[in-house]
Image (tube, rainbow, N blue to C red; front, side, top):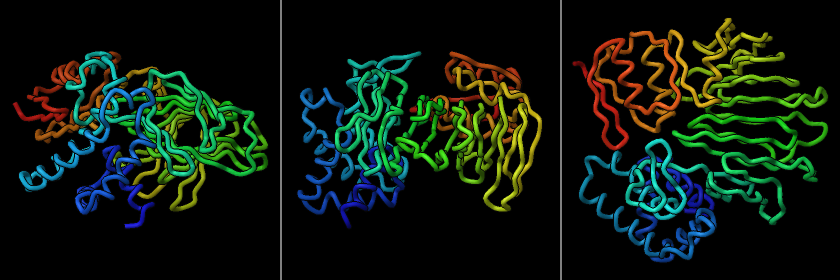
Length: 383
């Protein structure tokens, strides 16, 4: 395989995004010879190692253990291969992340890496040249480009990009926020972006004079856009574009939800779909959504669409089937509902600070059901 293709596979594997076929290919490539293993080791050292972690553990030994685990799992658990793959990346992530993950609301502690959950994922920042760094939410440090030039500053759970960067062409960064986490960006024009769990945003390090301010969203984000009539702000997602001059709005575009929507809080936006090229103008309190191959507009209570920015989960007349997707992203769990009738209940409730078990107990007051939680898997059954 070409090196650039393998690097893409490394990234997907280490961030828990590789398919079973891709992991098969990577496994065979690693087992082929020690030279391939060295390429993998070097890539991880350059792109994924936490700055102060290198001198505290043997990274090469960690990779060796990873390779042994892959080989053992492939031979012993063939029938459950897909499930087993979920922990391959975690074998490595235990070593590079346990140094700075700490306990929050019943979470993990930094001095006890054994407690690190298999499916714990990390926030990553990918540069225009493809290099990736792990974002430690405890850090306060400068963000640099491939040449070492400072382009912004990380202040814990937020990155603020400099408006003084002198670039003549667009260079993009991509922030990936896994389930169970949120993040904030201040773009070079001052636009404030809150990123919800399970979200990826591709955006220019600096916007260029004379061109639209365009970003690309997969997931959910709340935008507070800096006004600049000469440079419209454009959010592109799977099914819809949202064009604004300066306003506050929320865009949701999760593939699993199979529906893209934009909710306007303040100002004025134009939303258009990719399929029919239809455009609608939104007023505050309106929601544009793309479903059943068409673009529609409806008045909504905007609170439930933006509550997540302040850490809340708000449901207003939402079906349990829709709610489970949000719970999976919020709490970084997988939910298997074997009680189909439960999907028909309609819930109105607000949560802030509760854990997944407390939320489920609240839902039991609407309709009785049983559940178990094991290794981040929530299984719901009929009572």
